[in-house]
Image (cartoon, rainbow, N blue to C red):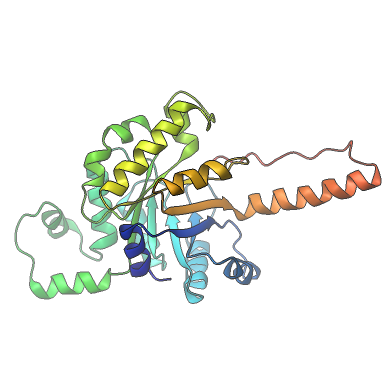
Length: 273
């Protein structure tokens, strides 16, 4: 699926499906392709992936029709531009709290390669842009997607202004950081957390902006489905490392139990993203 198709689905309310991919190996691609994902989430905020590795992953997944969406380390337009240069279809910007941050990211993702005063004037609707340049920018960036993380109480307070920014395609809730900002760390079944997620999804969908939450924690599948039924259409589920760990642990535990070695316990992965 290309970026234009993803954007249209997010805007219309259709669901799109993805997962966090951490493995930078060609052996992973066929396995990922068999799952039926629309996009892969490549994270450079929390994972030690360098620019070359990310670009390689982006080109590989793009070549098999799975859109690569990269989360940059900080809400920096220059970081976003670099990942677009590396063939990312879309950008996820972490810990956004103001509309101005989103506007600057729109400039980097949706108006590339325009920079400097000309870009700032365009973003402020000041001055006239030539028809030829306008058409070029539209064509050049038609497949680019911008998603921002909503992960704090201040972001929720500014959500109406954030959602009003032209060029924003979706918001993605970061459950770990949001729960901490709400004062209820990792309490994903807490009424305050559930109410916050409901509010973000509802507001986003009313503005025809895609919305979702990255639930990577065990036991959250039923709630994830409930949020999808409430309008969450950016379905970002789990991660390859978690699926690997949980699946292999389950089978190893089964073998240990059959052989009488089940007193030897393994640990569940502790990943906060």
